[in-house]
Image 1 (cartoon, rainbow, N blue to C red):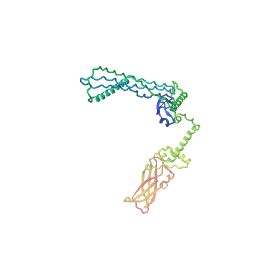
Image 2: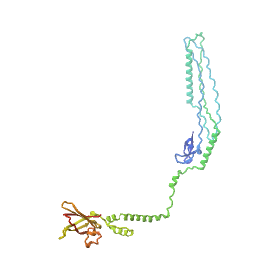
Image 3: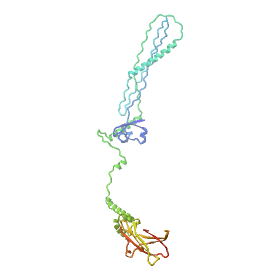
Image 4: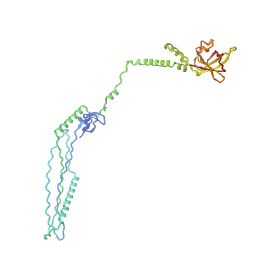
Length: 379
């Protein structure tokens, strides 16, 4: 069963069913203003409009007409039997007053079109009865004696009397009256609690999420000023760790950072080695000769230049002796302390675009070599 309820916020009426009311305890949400209210408390009692019962139709008159025959005078017809008068309709019971003081609509009178249709149906029924009677009279019957001619006056057809439409009003049960009364009282109470004005303000419905979203932000903490220096301190510590971890690469790519990194290593207890890039070393000069009057002694003089824009560590020298067939006869590596001359023993680095000289005297014994090669590198 459907009910008509009205939103107390925007006064919009709509239909609700018993299943919808039972789903959430009678609470519904208005489809226009989204207001949640108790639909049972706002149900409006509809006006009773019952379908009127069909009006009784008086039976049509039946008139029997004998078949026409030559040289035969029909007997005067007996007067048609008048239909029994229809029983007068029972007077409708007095209308029951509804709880909401809404008058019940009075029964409407039968329209002229309905009367015309009823009369037409009566004529059709009479015509059908006459046809059936003529069919029965077509059977042969004994010829009656001629009788004096009589004038037959046909009885005029009775005009169809207007039928007054009646409507039956069923009284409500006691339980239904009590339920309607409770609904009306709840509606009046709801209207008193939420009075409506012409200039009513739209009141949206807010959920818990809406309240949390629209709530003002909490006041800022007084410790927030300590976050800035603490963040800067942590950032400096991170930069220092990265710089010490990649100090050699930073000193190579940014030579002006070498001095600050050296001082930082003094406090951090680490070492700051010089860059070692053998690709930027170029051998400028080399000479290998035998010492006069000493057939087993050879003398090596060589120089290397630093092409890097920064200072590098002293490289290691590798000497390889070969014979006529380019086979390796001997190979040996020499550290800076071994190949530096006496006046360069105190050197610790190779400055940018600087030259480093090497001088060696070796005893080859009985080895016979005709060629050599030099290789500067970092181990």
